[in-house]
Image 1: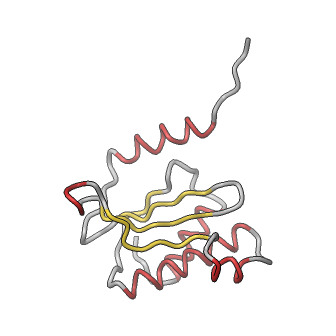
Image 2 (image 1 turned 30 degrees about the vertical axis):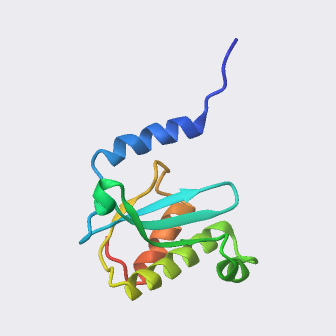
Length: 126
C-alpha cells in the first residue's frame, strides 16, 4: 500500500534543521512564523530567556479581534503583510529593531514573504 506523504512532518523536519543555525538572543531575537490554512501567526522570541526555555516578547496573528476586523476583506497575502506591520509596530514599542527571520520550515513565498515585507516596512531589520 502506498502511504500518503505528510507535508507537515516534512516541514517540521526542515524547521528543525534550520533551528540548528537560528537562535534568538536578547540583542537579536527570532521572528518566528506559523501559518495554518486560514490564519498566520508571528512571534518575536528570545530563546535565551528563562534559563534557555525561551520567552515570547511580541506576538501578532490574524485571530486577534482587532487584526481580524482589519483583514476580513483582504487576501491571505495582504493579511500577512498587515500582520507583519503590526508586529513591527509592537516590536518598536518594546525597543526591538533587529531580528533573525525564522520562516518555520515554509518556503519563502506567498504569505510568509508578505509577512516579512510588512515587518520590514514597519521598521524591523533582518
